[in-house]
Length: 432
Image 1 (tube, rainbow, N blue to C red):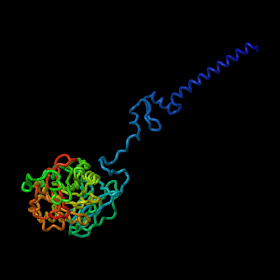
Image 2: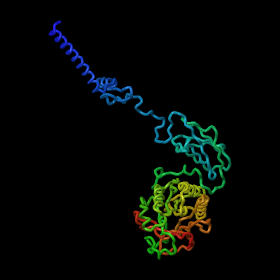
Image 3: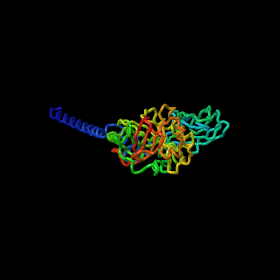
Image 4: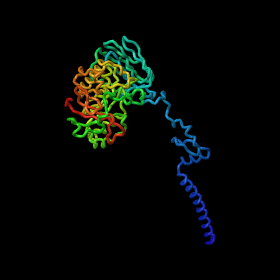
């Protein structure tokens, strides 16, 4: 082969190689753009055919409804559609039955392994020698009344999806009220979203004093030094009706203490209800350096309910230290309260039961009422060493008994609180 032919052969070979390299480069470039993975090729195929689901469960392609064909996309449907914290997961969960007694009653609660009441089920319990009882409102609590004193066994019937105790709970029904805080009272405390507030919280509709216990001479501002008449502290009492309070401003105004409502018993339903502003108020007051006490608006009609109310107040405090007593507010509810018709002897017994329960929790106790309420609805001579908080709205009280605190107006004004507020002086044992 001559040199000219050889050069022509080499040129042809080089051109062939260039064509092959161009084809390879084109293919690799397409893969580079597509991500270079077989999954991308699968996605492209799915896109060409209307979409689908990749092996890893992702929706691919243009089919936006592909997730409907993914069996694992939605959570499995539960057997109970209610919005409760205790829903069966398909596996049996253990239940525990708790039983207690205050006086001639049995209080049954069905709880989980964390101690929380399990709601939303049709529980049935059998009380030895008494009969069968049902949880009609499905709240996990059954209160059995008028039980003879003695020892009982309480068994829980079968509940679908749960393991029930194989052994019955034992409870001793008491014949006499023991004035000690009820350990499990928190199970019986309600929030305001569980009640009819308009019919149950009537405190705000009723003035603490009647026309005979106030006149135009009453002070409506914090007392000055020469107006205090030996009082050692100036204070206010508040509840949810005072709404949001700026406690730093209240402190700067000269307020030394605050008596804060922790709760009330429903005037209609009789349920125990926590004041929704209680913790916010007591924490704000303490943070501002204001001394605190609490009060409970009572609608107790007997000794058992009085012990319940005191137990609730103690339980809400949960060991928090107070500077002032826990007071039972013994005023009426405008004639519409369930306890408004009590005679003086019964009401006095209720006050004593409340205060003794508080005292047995190693805390100071007292009672709040107006002058005429003390005169006509309570037998103060029968009180058992408790503090007296008097409500009488005039410059000088006409009450002729001894008292430790005096609420001198409900029309006070204090910076940091919107609207009217009750104003008080405390004598801390200096009897008047």
